[in-house]
Length: 480
Ligand SMILES: [Zn+2]
Image (tube, rainbow, N blue to C red; front, side, top):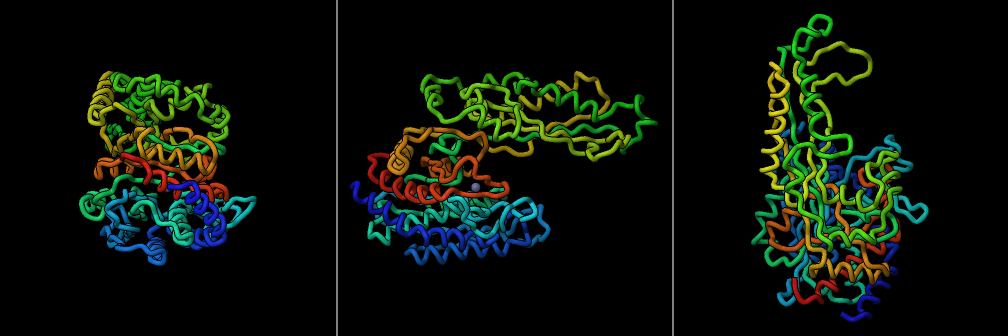
C-alpha cells in the first residue's frame, strides 16, 4: 500500500462527510431497541436497511440469517429474533479476509429520561452528533459502510476480502449469535483471517486506544429459606431464625470494604503481573480525576493510575448487587421475609478457571452459612458466566490497527483493557480460531447506554478513516 492510496482515501472520506452524516442520521431514525418487544419490527427494519445499503455498495451473498424464536422470558411467545446480516465484499483467494462485527440494535431511550433532544433524531451540536446509537453501535457499523463507499468512490480496490456480521440482539444478550457462529464456522465464515469488532471506546476523551482484554463475569445467587411465609416481627422477632439476618452475615464475609475478595483460593489463581505488562500502564492517558468524574463521587479505593486501572482490568472484583425477597420500599414495614436471595458476581481475569471458581465460591458460602449454626437452609448456585478475554496486543492485527491509528490521529494508541465483558469476542476467537481486535471509534464520555448519547464529529470521521486504514495495514502485514 502506498502512502498516496491512504491519502486519497482520507480526502475522499472528508469529501463525503455530508453523505456519511446523512447515512448515520437515517440509521439513528430507526428505533431498533432490541429489549422492547413492541419495537421488534423496527429492529427488523434496521436489518433490511443495512441489507439495502450493502447491496448498493456492491456486497454479494447478502443474507439475513434468521435465528428462530426468542427464548423465554418473553411476553409474545412467538417473537422472532432479529436476523444477523451477513454479506461479502470480494472473494479473492490471494487476499486476507477480515470479518467485521457490529450490532444494529440499540438501548432504549425516551425524551423523558432526560435527553435534550429526540433520541431518534441525529442532532449536530458543538461538533458532536447526538442520538441513540450514534456511538453504540450504529456509528461504527455505518462507519464500515462509509469506509467501503469511500474506497469505491475513490476507485481504490479493497485490500482485503470483507465479511460483515451485523447482529440485532447485542444489547439483549446476543441471543442466537453463538449458535450462528458455530453453524457458519466452516461455511460463511470459512477462511476468515481476522475479526475486527468496533463496539468499544477510548478510555478517556483525548487519546485513541486499542483494547486487548476484557474481564469475564460469573454471577451467583445464595438463597436462604426459613419460615413458611413472611412473618410479623412483633410476634416472631427474637423467637425464630431469620433468613435475612443469615444472608447479611454470609454476604458480609465475601468482600471487605477495601474491595478485597475474602474467599481463599481466588487471588491465588490470578496471573502474576509481568514487567512487560506493567510497562504498558506507564503512558496511558488516565487520572484519578477521570474516575471521580465517571463515578460522580470521591469514593475511589485507590489513588494511583496504575492501581485503579489494574484493579479495573486485570484483577478480579466481587460486587454484591441486591437481595430478592427483601423489603425494599420506603417506610417501615415490620416484616420478617421468609426467603431471601442474595445476588453477587465476580469479574474474572486470567488465569481463573471458571469451574474451579464456582466450586470454591459455593463451598465457601456453604461453610460460612454452616458456621452460623442456623436452622434455616441455604443454597448457593451459579446463574450465568461469561469468560474473560485477553489477546496479544502485538500481533499482526493489533500492529496494523496501531499503524492506522497513528496515520489518522498522529499518536500511538494506548493499549488498554476493559473491566466489562463482550462475550462474543471470545466466541469469535475460539470458534473461528482467529485473532480478534477491538478497534474503537468513540470516546469514553460518549454516554453509550445513557442519556444524550453522542459521537464527536472528529471521532466519527476519524473513525471511518481508521477502520479503512486498518484494512490496508492489515493486508500489508506478513503474518496473521
Ligand atoms: Zn455496543
